[in-house]
Image (tube, rainbow, N blue to C red; front, side):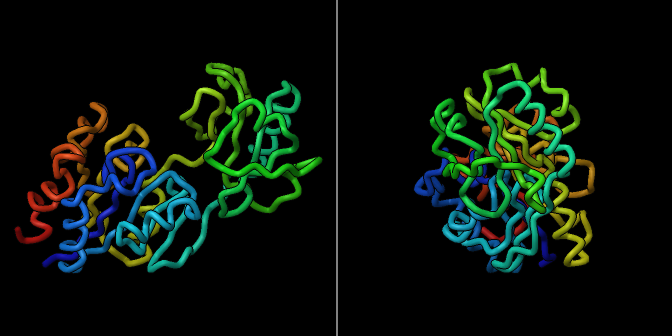
Length: 260
């Protein structure tokens, strides 16, 4: 069988909700096993930091991952690297936040910890996604690599930040937003190039608007879940059933990736 390179989003694609691993449909786990038996390359493609997704990766039976919104690459359980955000732009954004009195934090390594200059970020957000570690006098200039930034403010105040223009960002919470990579295709290309694999041998699976970053005209096959956003379905080559309606299994069967 022709070896294919498959990249799966997590939430809404492989699992049915949130960070609860118990929400992985049995049919999705069966599909993963059958795909591995057929010799295909399997990888997760997530916006999460590698350190915060690796346990779920193992639970799902994967050893490869595109993480950090496309900027992190893990192959055969080994993190090959994470491309940082442009430092000069993050420094400028921090300076503007300081001028405007907005609480902010930085992720400077592959961990579950966010550095903050004082207690204001936690007091404003009461966030539990990451641990906060206060570093008095925190200065982005003191760190070689900057992977993510977090800014606390109500919507739509982010649009008033001049230094944010041209930077990738997204808002998942009312209290704050993320400045983080949003280019899953970037990581997918890096993995395919690592194996000298043709782009047309890849298949990507997704459901949410951030998955549009891998629904690109690179020549690979794009599969949208039945529960996907309409914009994702419009970019897809194939629309399967919903994640909780055997969507992964049905797509793999329809695409001839394994025998029934």
